[in-house]
Length: 491
Image 1 (cartoon, rainbow, N blue to C red):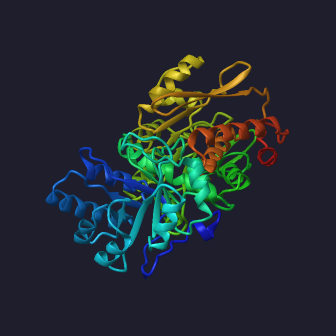
Image 2 (tube, rainbow, N blue to C red):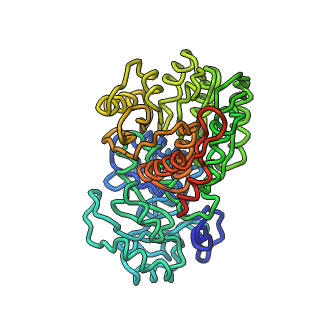
Image 3 (cartoon, one colour):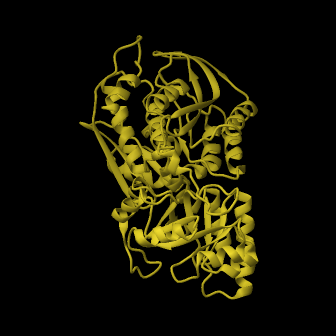
């Protein structure tokens, strides 16, 4: 992944241990209520390291709380680090301790904890980082990157300071201070092996989603194929939509595509002549088999076909220990007008699957069926996106291609604000596979480490080019041009 000699190297000074590299999302606990439950949810999103900060708490509370957190970390495969307190780290048999500049020496911690534990050190400049490395630290915390409300900032080397030390320090570097999903990309690009976060995760209504977003950003340093996407969808024998369009899009954009088929269709550009659905148990078996072996970064769904398949997928995802961001393209009607999802299936999707979605990407007819009302304007679209969000997905992208006007405008709502994505409308019948392709492009860019807003923007450009550059093929709705759009994207 990127510079693999740095990204996955954990230098352990004078120790022999089997801990994973200090990399990814490094979560520091706060002082809020229900800490154990909030941390449990966050760990499901993919926390790599948990640092237990227990200031102003009694010894018995620290031991009780610390043991619970340690067991959670063991369950989710995360490293458990104690903040500042070497004795507490010893008593909890933690994986290690993180020391501030005034919290004792590395040699003292090593002697008290033993050779098999991880010792981290907070640093604020190159000299402190070099000294920590020379004294035998296993990783360094470096910051602050940005201002933060969690403590008074007296040293803020920022992104420039991180870039300056990166080539001089062989240890893994944990960037700390004011990091969120909106600014983490700059920190990772500057060379951070991990990002330390507190409020941006633990104060989030959905800590697992917040962690999963941050975790994906680290894929931006990987070589191609960058990130992986599992498409759960139906087959289009004509090749323009369905799982064929998904695989083309994911592969051409530079990610790895895996697949699980839900149904076989006999179709071409003029429509669907027949559908052969697959048993829900076999669909689940495909998904489980892939996930048991291949690291999947994002799951994208298309035609799910039956209520049994929708329910099986929802149950499978809910029972997993780890959260994989789910992009749902609620395919309900084919371009030729054939129903691909019945009313019972839609109800099961609303009740069981949408609450697990990271992103829902309906077009207007699909949104109308989900909400049970007409959507006739951009104003009504904006409200519909909000109402769709209330059904449970973390984010909603409502596509406006079915409205009229010079521009095709899509609206992204994340629970806090709406953002519009506009493109010049292309008046053409070469639009087969637009929804599948658009959602797959978003999933691919997410898997590659793009934040959601950027992933949607890039995907909007890609699908707009695929429509604009499409050539007539067949006698009905011709497919979009995946290949030409990918070439256009590369430029």
